[in-house]
Every structure is written in C-alpha cells, then in structure tokens.
Image 1 (tube, each protein chain N blue to C red):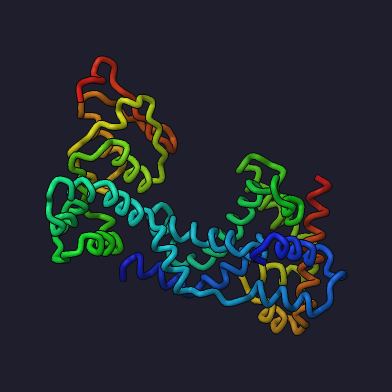
Image 2 (tube, each protein chain N blue to C red):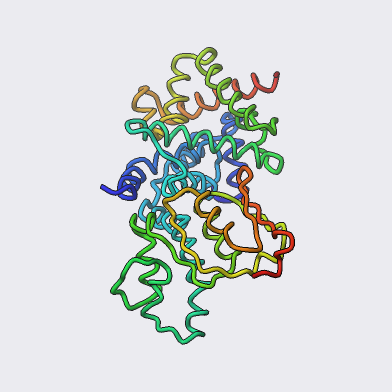
Length: 186
Length: 161
C-alpha cells in the first residue's frame, strides 16, 4: 500500500475484486487493518505542533545572535519566554517550555528580532500567511512582546504604533506595507 | 486535566480507527497518516475545537471529509480521481460539501440495508474488516465484495451527473 504499485493494486482490487483470489484480498485487508504505532505517531504530531515549531524557529534565530553577543546560555530560555526556568540547557528548556500547555499563554519577548522572523512565528500560531508588500520592512528589528492567548489584532495594533510600517489583516493573510515617507525611519 | 492530555487520550483511543478510514479512502499510508495528523495538529493549536460529547463522531467524520477533499486537490495526478465517489470534478469547496451530502443521501436511499450497514461501519466508524465480518456473520472477503459493489454503485451514479 505504500508504493504506487500497491496503490494501483488497492484501487483495482476495489473496482474488480473478481480478478483476485480470496487470499490476495485477505492480504490487502490485513495491510489496511494493520495496527499503527500510536506512540510514534503521537510524537510526530507533537513535533508538528505549531507553537513548538514556532519556538524552535525563534530559538534558531535568537540563539546564534545571543551567543555572538556573549550572552550566557543560562539566560536563553528567558528570552524565549519570560517564564522563569531553572534548566541550564537552553535547547532542552526551550522545547520543554513549548511542550506544555503553559507555553500556550506565556508571553513571548522578541528582543531586537527581524520583523519577518517575528511574523513567521506569530502568523503560524494564528494560521495566517504573511505578505510583505514592501521589502524594506522585512529586516526591521523590534523589541516587543507577544501574548499568544490574545487576539492577533492586539499584536498588530501594537506593531502599528512603530514608525515606518502598517500591518493589516485581510482574510487569512497579514499584509505588511511601508508607510509612505517613513521607510527610512527605522 | 489539561487540553493536551485530553487530546492525547482521544488520539490513543481513536487513532487506529481514524487511520483505517483514511487508508480505505486514500489507499496511501503516508497520506492517511498526514490527514489524521493534520486534524490533531489543528486541535493542539486551538484553531479547532470540539463540542463535548461529540469528539468521536467529529474525529471520524473529519477524517472522511478531509480525505475526500484531499482527493479533489490531488485527483488530476492520480487515478483515484474517478475511483472513489467521483467527487473530484469540482474546484469549489462548497460543491464538495454538497457532494458529500449527496453521497450520504445516495447511500441512505440506494444501497441495500446490509450494504448500508457495512459501508457505514467501514467509512464512518472505522471498523476493521474482521469486526464487520463478525457483526454481519459473513467472511471478510464477502465484506470486501459488498464494499466494492457499494463503491461501484456510488461511482456510477455520480458519473451520470
């Protein structure tokens, strides 16, 4: 069933069972009813959880910057989330934090992070796409806090208070425009 | 109990049946896993919520509907396009929903009582062929042939439209 040939076989067996022996049909049914590895699939789904993926992206963006800045590993988890953590291993702490329900409502601080990285995280959380209609805004960096349990409009309104850009939500897309006359302001 | 724990319990309880429904419609192991996975990722993210007491029906119905909609998007490349329920001719999601309703109505009105039971046990409830055979007092091969006959009737009916 996992190959194209098996897939074609499956289709043909459905349409023309008279062309196959009982044992061939039995073998196909055994395959279709094979018990899955539930533990493995649950882990795979948890790894795809949007917030966990988002925090990994944040970590990917922030950790090299922090290391380059000489900031100790021990404080990295606090950059990812403002929850206090005694965990000394940054990556473990980040993943563990994201893996709990607490992470769903903990504010996330972005310290000097590019707008495209911020929106990548935030838009994923709300199931939105992002369209930069001005490339000048992509690399703008912000110090801001995002509360994932609040409506997306709250965060957008906060960003719109900064000079140089205007964000709007149209259907499933966050549109990012540079504000005329302010493109060089950031 | 936290939401994630509740969802994990639901996953462990219903995953095998959800996967069987997907395998029966899509006939592709990885795609079937992806459909079930997408449903739980949406639930974990909070984008989708379920009414208490309707979880099992929601999960199994979602699998069936997502599989059929996936066929619509991928049918051009796949022979499955005219294999299962010929639901694929439309580019309009609303039309898909109407077709799903049409299929349910056709099943209710045109299949024999036994075929209707077998169809729902497999496509709606995710029962194994063994479970269906035991419930109906027939062999697994007979179950396969009843399902095959039902699918052929459905396919031919919607091809005429």
